Length: 183
Image 1 (cartoon, rainbow, N blue to C red):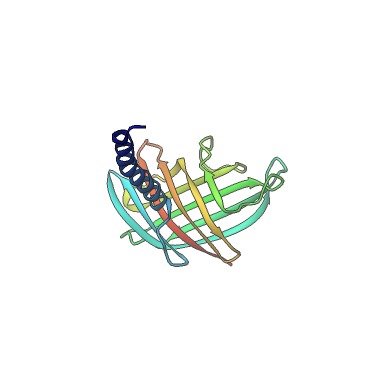
Image 2: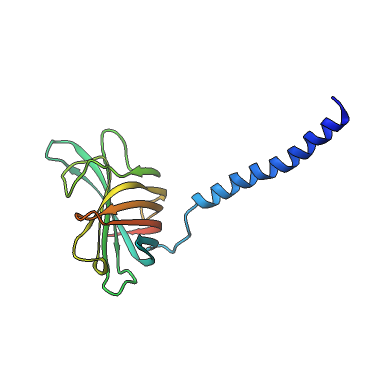
């Protein structure tokens, strides 16, 4: 190989290699959740305007028998006491059939075939009542909850969920949580 070609290839490699490494590092940083104290959450709510909301968060786990006789593992994560003037009432449920798997660390997706409150589903279902946004509740439409660590006392994770009310008004929630077990 001629020396000029070797020098050009080396130059190109020194330019491209740092760009590739930087893109992997920046993607990993973007995917990592923001650190929050146990029992709290930090979310960005987008509904025309962006607003940061914070508050307390707790979880409960239970096994239930559905109307169809299936045993379900249900993880209920409740978000309360937001720093909004009129408050927030928000809850997400992760449900899986007990005979299939337990709820562990991992990504759980919103089940888009749920409308309203139902007795059995697999995946994530959530609702939010943001009193400052009106009287109509928002129900989960798309997105996911990711559990990054799970113990008997604390569940840490993040979410990126889109919710919608009956009038079609959308609410996007993104952020991190560290829920304490509710006894």
